[in-house]
Length: 379
Image (cartoon, rainbow, N blue to C red):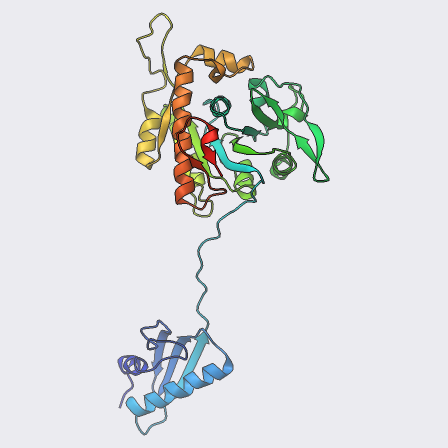
């Protein structure tokens, strides 16, 4: 009588391993089966591959084969036992929370020159006008521009003692606390650092700073998807990220990469929305005309394609550039088209933060009841 693989499988279906509810085959414990005359080689996975357990399995299988397959003959059974490979979810990069800071939001762009720092500055001002406690970490190590936009060029942070430890005190203007590498370099000085040096400086500004209590810390990231971005997602538990882009295809191609960075499985930072900057141009003498210099609604279409909220569009207005250059962000104005746009964008952003915090494990749970001011945010 010839031993067949089918007969061996049917026999193994009648056997169970210790601690298993299913038979060996249905439990997935049986691997390859090879038959050479009266010799049967079986690959067997056991969660408890001790010598005693292996011997018991061999005896059980051999007896069953003698009884059910090859009666009255000696069957040689060789069992190769291995432990099942451990399957675990990919490790998610998680950072350390900063005490007192409720929400940490990264402002990103795949491409340089799309106005990311301008958007960051005006979002911070708008949040501050709403009554929020706001800070900005200028993480653009190689091209810091936040000090210029907040009229802080030449300023130097002071050292203060907090709980017996020396900390940097962020510089405050317009109700916004700011730390930037630009505070520690001369305007004409190039920062020529490799990645590890830049990451070390960034960690010092994050964790060696006395930020105090903040409702929002906005992080102005550099363009691209490099070392600084990885350092941020490793160092901090971001509540989410905002991607800034202009409408043209060249910028949108890089914005897609920025979105892809945060959506990496081991990073998994929610993208709260996309903001389109320099959306259109309206001359002062033709207030009813819109000229789509860089293309029309490109970032809006990208948001729809990626199933990401579109937070709004900011027009190309000369006063916005002038305000940034003079160190007084445009959102500080009492009224106007740009002010209205930033208010609407900020409301949508805060709504997305609320949605994120209520549906995903939050850094610190917040409740926003009317989107008018941070007096509506409750821990």
